[in-house]
Image (cartoon, rainbow, N blue to C red; front, top):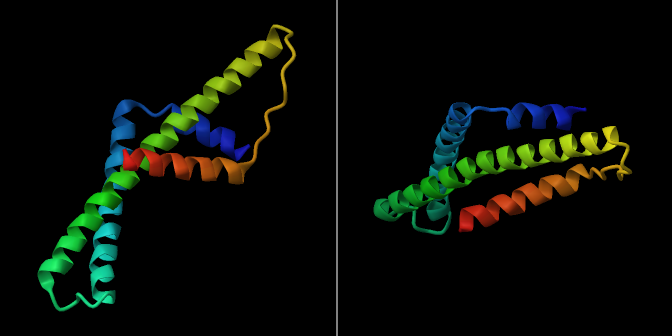
Length: 123
């Protein structure tokens, strides 16, 4: 299934590949955050003050950059954990031990990943 293939691919990323992915996500997040920060001040009546707009743009850039980078790292760590759990499950089956079928709720998994990322960014 797609989720297993995704986890296998992401969990097998080298440290260099992970750092490159985090860097790319950080750049994209930075640009988006900068735009959102600048627009937020204009929508609140601060559009005439370029100092406030610039500060909001920089703050948005820094926050979104950190969030995007943290998201990539979080997804990588979660994928590694799921691969380890699957491998453990397969080993139990081979030993003849009883195992429960894993309950996969993709919506729940996505929500968990998002909240985990928000928590990590806030730390």
